[in-house]
Figure 1 (cartoon, rainbow, N blue to C red):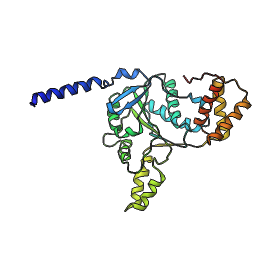
Figure 2 (figure 1 turned 90 degrees about the vertical axis):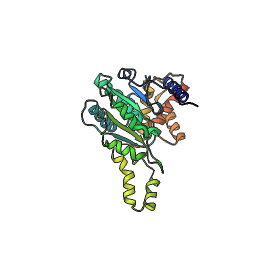
Figure 3 (figure 1 turned 180 degrees about the vertical axis):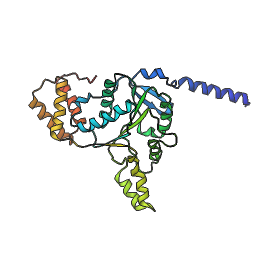
Figure 4 (figure 1 turned 30 degrees about the vertical axis):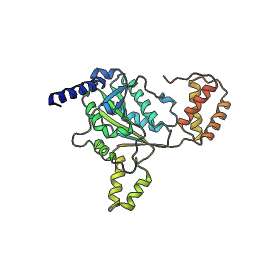
Length: 289
């Protein structure tokens, strides 16, 4: 087969790929939405029509966490010093919900659409440099990068590249980007993985330090813990009031406690699941928009 034929085939393939690939994002495209999801395969920021979030006043029992994150995010949006943030703790306690709700609150404060929320999936962290190279071009906007449920298992080395990115590396982290991550693990790695390093490394202290120091790259750690029965019921009552669920308070309380016992947990997530169940039982329509 001649060289010309080979080139023609390659050109056809390239043209076909170009047609099916999303177009590069432009400045004006950020006006489409307040939130985007990074599609690493195409280096594309997919607009989110409606961000799935809870009004901040419905996030009960999180006053200190709210204050810290609101202040940090507001400083970032106003070009003041701000930190990358690790929100860590028990499952279902409102970590990612708080990030999304705080983003909405800051947009209200600013009365501007300058601040965008961009979600990057945990498995795409290896492509984070690519995403930063895209966002750094759009310095008229500010970006919160959110990675939900970030953690690393044994054998993974992606955390090494993340460490250098959080520190900025030679190029430095773009001024218009801040990184927020949620995790069930304070050090982003399972305890047995760290313990294993103690028994297998030639210099265990250095090996352990390399792994746990990843979380040190986050200037702010915000802890989330299991909630009390009182807070759990406060969340339930706030939802019931917002959605006009027509049941007596004592009946809602009794059903809510029974629900938490069957689930073996009390959390914001369990409360929301109960309210959806209760709304279905009472033919009540619910919407967070």
